[in-house]
Each structure stands twice: as structure tokens, then as C-alpha cells.
Length: 159
Image (cartoon, rainbow, N blue to C red):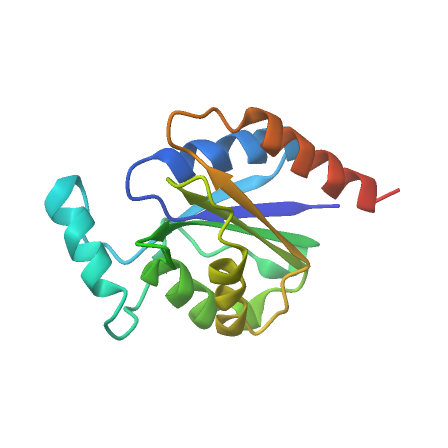
């Protein structure tokens, strides 16, 4: 099964998670963005405010993947202020109708809650119903065990 992992990362935490996941799955990896500098405290505050604004146009760094060759699409994004990040929602709205494989979401956040309800709100932005999602708390925590467990579950689906 051929897998593609796509992510948006403001701080680098979601990037790190998706790089680990892509390596374990031998998957292709792409970053998507709206091109806006969201670094530092100013970027964080602007990102929180942007959650209440219309969705921006996003693009995939480099070339867009050839969706036809992927049986599985894993989309990673952070939660901001306990809400799905605007760039992740915009990505799903803009690109998910092109996905040919099963969709899985990976959502990173700072709190200890799993935010299942907030994450399920992301589902409505996708033209494809996600098969499952993974909620990862990143503050002072290495997500390696959860990532490996999720990857194992994905591999078990093939059996």
C-alpha cells in the first residue's frame, strides 16, 4: 500500500511527527502552507485570530502529489486555541476531493485532552470521510509510542 503524508506545522512539532510517521510507513512526505509567517508569539496570536476568519488558499510545497498512486493519505495539523488550525481545514477543503485513498488525520496539540470533539469538527471540511484520527499531546512529551502504535494499526489493516 502506497502512503502519502502531508502536514502543516507552525512550530516544527507536527513536522517532526509526520517525518517520523512517513519514515515508519516508507511514505512520501509533503508540506502544505498558506505562505504566511506564523512564527513566535506574534505568529501564534495571529494564528488564533485567523481561526475565526475565512479560510486562506493553501498550496503544497514543491509539486502537488499524484493522488492516483496513493492508497492512503495521512494529513497532519495542529490544534490552535482548542480548534482545528485554519490552514489544515483549508487544505482539506481545497484538496480532499482529489484523494483516491483512505484518509487519516493526525492532530497535534499542547494540552493533555485528546480533543476528540474538536478533531471530529475537521471531518466536515473533507470531501472524504476520514477512517480514523490520532490525537497527540506534544508539550514536554515524546509521541514516539503513540506514533508507532498508530502505524502498527495502519499496517494491521493490510493483513
